[in-house]
Image 1: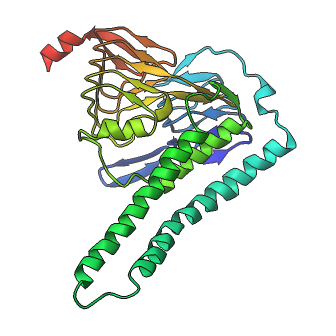
Image 2: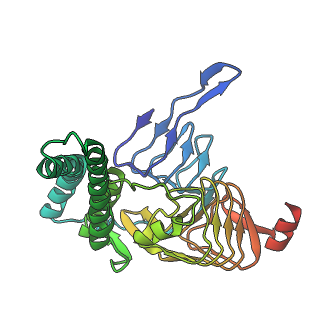
Image 3: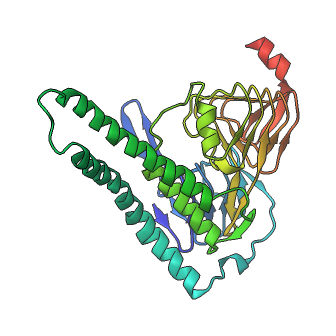
Length: 328
């Protein structure tokens, strides 16, 4: 793999021409990424792209394109988009310093160090409350100390991952933010915190899942179901109606990060909507009783009309939701 200069990668990209078939591995070509290219999330590029190429979301690029441009879909198709402005990369010296300090020191070391205090606090309290176990009550004291450790862990998660993150990252922030803005730094912090201070309960697939999502800021209606833990990429901008089902590996994404600008929703998932396995609603709104089929991906800003089933990447309406349900 060869990567040029000033290339931006979001998470989940695969850069390889590797093929594994019948017990053999073959790499057919080098993967060359041209300078000044942009990659959204979860793309697969085999041979590479030319300088100045924009690759969107869940895009498959099997061959080197003949010219630079904007690519989206599976397989990739070209589309037009306005030229980028360089203003979003302008930042003061302090903003650039804080960006490097926050991402390279705070997010890398501080949150893990803070998380380790949970064990120290629980151990200290345990020794203060029960300096020695008695011969009679040692069993209850041991159980109580285990409960103390668990309680401190839950309290730390609630205070840091839920309450503190809701203070620095909430739906009142501006919906468009340049790269070096404090909003983006706080967004980075919140994402890192929630990877370190993980939820103590796995509520996915249970009646408590919606309650957990509400704790992180998502507005969820009644009878929500999903077997996934992380349904909302940006929970504070999630708006979900009643009787919504989001199947395995399906997601709702409320942000785009292109041209060094972070843009947010909110986006709405109408009541009765079903997002099937691997489907993704990306910065789009769904009407009521919409069905997004397996592996389908929406255009940014697309409005999915009520009562229709959509398929493809980018997705298009293929039948009514009623016809889909009757055929299954």
